[in-house]
Each structure stands twice: as structure tokens, then as C-alpha cells.
Amino acid sequence: MAETAAAPLVDVRVLTDWLDEHLDGPPEPLTAERLGAGTGIGNALFEVHRGSAVYVLRRPPSVLNDRSAGNMLREWRILTALEGTPVPHPTPRLLCEDSSVLGAPFLIMDKVDGFTPGFALPEPFDSDPGLRRDLAYAYVDALVDLADVDWRVRGLQDLGRPEGFLQRQVPRWLAQLDRYRTRELPELDFVAGWLEENRPADHPIGLMHGDYSPFNVMVAPRPPARLAAVVDWDTGTIGDPLLDIGHLLARWTNPGEEPVLGEQAGGTAHYPTRAELAARYAQRSGRDLTALPYYQCLALFKLAVILEGTYAREAAAGVPEADNSMAHLVPRLTTAAADFARGRRV
Image (cartoon, rainbow, N blue to C red; front, side):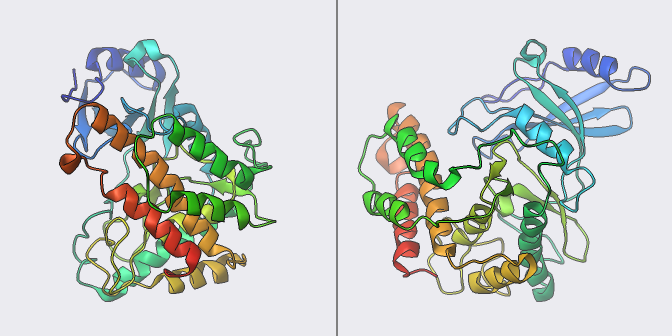
């Protein structure tokens, strides 16, 4: 068994038999090692060695804060649809929807050669100002390419419900919050009302990631700065792609600002500002970003609701308020959402 204290299991013997049946070539010995076991509530990842080949197995988390998280079939459909597009992504190999194999559906993908730039940058990216700047623009360029994917041609017509996408957002997330809300959150009522009153009348429709940030990309390990893959597609849908750029920029910290969640890897030095990244997106995509504050506000509102689920779960488990990981973070998100709405944060 490949196992951690709080993570799902991978039965290596069962997985070996399943892969021998579904992959070409003769049977091969197999090992599986848990990746990122201490990184929180995300999907469980295992590095799988089978002979000379190296894969990544991805399966749902043991706890879902968002009912769409952990949807392996959705992720499989998006990854296969991205084949042959400019959007960098892991190469999908196999999907198992039979939960009797490992206790949950799972994906097998090629391992990506790269690093996740969520908390820290390796050299030469850490000390090279030009590489930092180019890396930030690469985050934006991937979103431009994603929004340009012809989702109809690629068989994703039924992936989401694009009609009324923005109209559903506030009621959908407030309904989720009502299932576990135990405290008042600052500015929440103002933010929800502002979003309803300032919803753009028209918006683009396209394939969107749904949780796009430097934590969900992998960067090629050697210059030039480029993305090796965008990962974690289980919340992807057909909706408004401007919400992806809103999410990225809402979490981005300008020099001298108090971070909403945390500064980008290595601090704010030598990175473009939010305004510069927005200009890059507008120039490359040709899309109108007049309503960008709406999308930044909505992104933080949505994130606050999701993470309040973690707060409620920890509180129900008896975690003291002082030790609850979300006690102060969620109120900071709702306050920042209000700041974008009022133009105090731009």
C-alpha cells in the first residue's frame, strides 16, 4: 500500500494488475509514492514508476469543499480536449471510473518536468528579474490560449451551462455557504449585493480553468520562462473566461501592498503589477476588461465561501479559534473583495 495518515490509499498490487491490463506492452513492476501529502485538501497525487516509465496518478481528495472538486471524468475530458492546442497540460493516458479498483475514480497522466511556483522559485528564476517578469506574463498568456480553445469543436458542449453563468454565481455560492455557515463574515452582504447589482450585461463564453493561480501551474525548469503545464482541471467548465484572469489578478500582490492570501513566490520585486498583467491580457486577447473589478470581487467571494467550509469543519472538530487555519484568512478575503468593488484595490 502507498499510504499517508490522512490520504487515500493506492493498492500497488491492484494498480499493477489494472495497468498491465490497460497499458500496451508486457507486465512491468510498479511502485507508487504519495506526492505533496502535506499540502492540504487537494486531490491526492501519486508518482507511479512502471518499468522505465513515470506517471502521475490523480484521484479525488478525501474531503470536498466544492462539490465539483475531484471530478476525474471532467478533468479527463478537458485534458483530452486540450491535446493539440497551445495550452500546456499533462498528457492524459488512462481514466478509471470504476471505484472498486482503488476506492475512487482516478487518472493516469505523464509526469511533467517542472516545478510549481506557488511558494518559492528555484534558481535562476529567483534572482533573475527578467525571468520573473516573463514568468508572470506566461501565467497570463496561458489564459489567453485557454479562452481561445474552440470547446464546441473539441466535444465539450455539455461540460457546463454557459447561459446564465454569471447570474447563477452569487445564489449558488450563498447556498453552499448556508450549509455550513457558523459566523458572520465582514463585508459579505455588501459584496453579494454589489455583485448582483454590477453584473456585466454581456460576457464572453469559453473554456475556463476555475481555480487558476501559480499553485496550479508547473514551470519548465530551465530558461526561457514558460509553463510546462496547467494542472488541476477538475473544476474546469464552460463559462466566463474573464473569471480566470480575475482570480489570478485578485490574488496578485503589488509592491507595498498587504497580500490578500500571500505574495507571489519570492516576493513582489521584479514582477509586473496587476495593471500590467491586465494590459497584457487585454492586448493579447482583444477582450474588454472594463468589468475586471467585478471578476476580481467575484473570485474572492467564491474563494471565501469555499474556504469557510474548512473553517466550519475545523471548528466542528473542536479546533480552537486561535488555531483554526481559516479564522482570519476568510474575513481577509471578503474584505479584499469589497475593496475591489469599491475601487480601493485596483
